[in-house]
Length: 354
Image 1 (cartoon, one colour):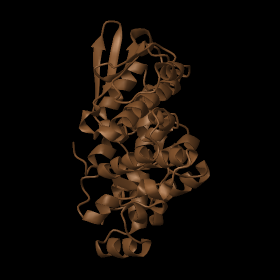
Image 2 (cartoon, one colour):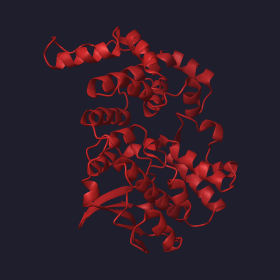
Image 3 (cartoon, rainbow, N blue to C red):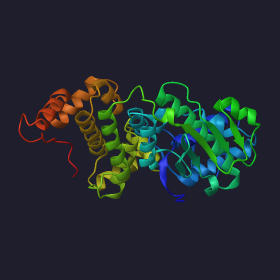
Image 4 (cartoon, helix red, strand yellow):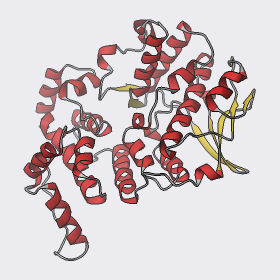
């Protein structure tokens, strides 16, 4: 387990939200994590050990079983960012699970997840043995609760597992879990798992769209791989923050906070690398806009929102500034080129990487 892996701070924000509800001190939850609440806004990136520190602090402050259910109940499909959009556009729940395993880096899970078949479906389990004992129960409960909520959003109906299996050190009464998961629950199982029926796995997702799925999956891969042609170190870090929050497109001050520096230092160091922040910001927006316009049938309003614009008109003006074409004309030219109607594919003049 790489405890210095850099990841999104979404989990920590939900932990602190639960702490407030329970009357626990946010400052006490952050003690020893190297984090402060002011830096946890959009674009914040943390290391895995920092999330674990917050979990352990919260458990020390609130020792009642069931804490993970309270935290997990806060999640939505949009909590997964771009991965959530990708899963939503899949054909069925089985395909959505495959996508989540393909892009494990984006799932927010702090411990390994395994998906194995059983007679009548699949068993999704969490390997919490990599965690300290005081963190195991809350992480396992949180993971199972998140799955129930996200699967229901994907299916656009209530999701009821075949069975939930719990290997908790200090579980709540079984009735508590039965009430939440609405299915049989086994306490004292070998692992923490949710069993999903074949019928649910094969259910068509109401918002399935193959073009959107493929476009978003390509963006997920780009996010996991990074923009490899950028070699200056700080510019690469800035690009990773911008890409990982493409639906929010954080401002320079938020990116600076995510990287542990002032906005002034960020601009000064990027200028020294020959990579102004605005250039990097427009580079990311241009790349994502190209993917979404070329590989999906998403409307301009949806694409504008995905790229952080308040309205389609603002996005259209920016895109025309980058490429010389309105988005609708660019999309039509791309598709004509693919059909062989107008010579080679249109070259896009994106903001340069100097």
